[in-house]
Amino acid sequence: MSLSARHLSWVRSSRCADKTCAEIAADADHVYIRDGKSPDGAMLRFTREEWEAFRDGLKLGDFDVI
Image (cartoon, rainbow, N blue to C red; front, side, top):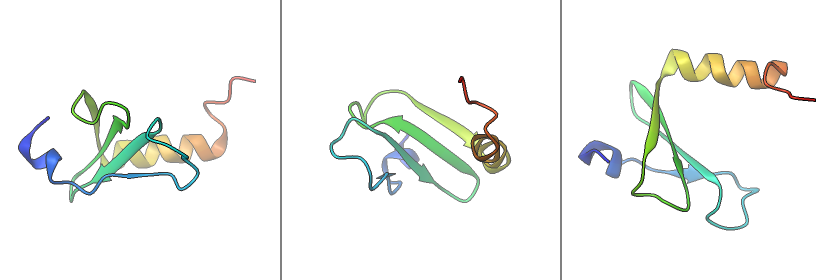
């Protein structure tokens, strides 16, 4: 994990009862996602535009499998 990512404020959904949920953080240019069970492990980084497209796709049901 990069030094800058360590200093981000990571949050998880209020619906998450334990540390098994994904966590997200953001800086001025990017949104980051990591596994709450493995905070020092790999993380994904998206530009804000990529994140907004993903978020909008979720809302529209683009990723629904059923």
